[in-house]
Image 1 (cartoon, rainbow, N blue to C red):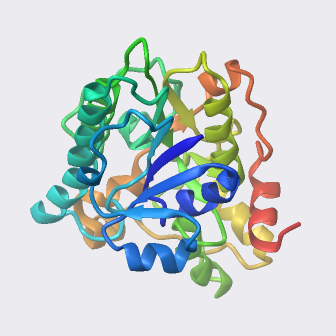
Image 2: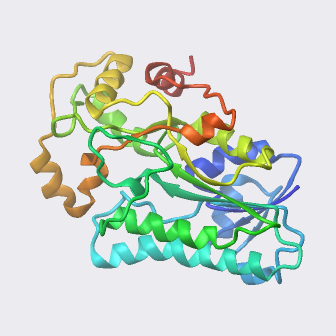
Amino acid sequence: MKILMTGGTGLIGRALLPHFSRDEVIILSRNPARAYQQLGHHIKVIESLDVLPNFDDIDVVINLAGEPIAQKRWTENQKKVISDSRWALTEAITEKIMASDHPPHTFISGSAVGYYGDQQEREIDENLEVDTPEFAHQVCARWEEKALQAQSMQTRVCILRTGVVLSRHGGALSKLLPIYQLGLGGPIGNGRQYFPWIHVQDMVRGILFLLKQPQTQGVYNFAAPNTVTNREFSATLAKVLRRPHILMTPEWAIRISMGESSCLLLDSQKVVPKRLQDAGYNFSFPKLEPALKETLFDY
C-alpha cells in the first residue's frame, strides 16, 4: 500500500507509523529534517503537495495535521493559525483527490469532539447534528465539510472525532502528570462535565480497523465507551499515581487564565463511539483505570 500522511510527527502519527513498516509511506511536513530525525530515513518526506502531480498512485491518505488547539490562548491571530492549519491543507488534499483519475480508495481525516460543543449530561453519538457559533465547533465543522467533499464512488472518507488521547509520549496527559505527581491534582470547576478520552492504542487500532473495513465511511467518535466526568477522571488519575485528590481549580480561574479556550476544559461532552462499535470494533481499553495504568506504568 502507498500511504500519504500529514501530521506524521504528531502524537497519533508517531504511534501509527510503525504499523506501516511493510508499506510505502510519504509524510508531508514543513520541516523534513525534523521529520527524518524523529521518524527515521526509511520513509519519504515532502514539504508540499505540489511535489505530487496527482494522487493516482496513492492508495490511502491519512490527514492528522493541525496546529495544537490548546497550546496557546485564542487570540484572533491564533484562531486563524488553528483554522488555516486544518482547513487549507484539507481543502488542498480534497482538490488533489477530486482531480485524480485513479484517486485513493480511502481518505481518513481528523476532527475532534469539540464539534459537539457543551452538551451537559446528554449522551452524544454521531447522529447528533450541532450548529453553534462556538469556535471549536466551527473549526471542526468546516474541517469535516472540506474532507467530506472528497467522498465519491472511488474514494470513501472517514472522519475521526477524537477525544483526549492518553499516551505517555505527549498530549494532555503529559501536561497533567507533574501537577498530579506533586499531589496538586483535582477536578476542574464542579467536575461534573464529561471528559471524553481514548487510549492511544485504541486510537491507532481504530484507524487500522477503518482502513481494513471497506464498507466504513462517514463520521466516527474516537472516545472510549465508558464515559467519565472530569471529577472521575481526576480521582482515577490520582489513585493510579497514589497521590492525594483534595484540591480543585475553580471555574473562574480557568476562565481568567484561558479566556475563550476555557471551553476545552469546562464543556461537557458525554461522547460514545456508537458507529465504531456497531462496525465491529472492540476496544482494548474501554475502562479508564486500566488505560491509565498501562499508559503510565506499562502494566
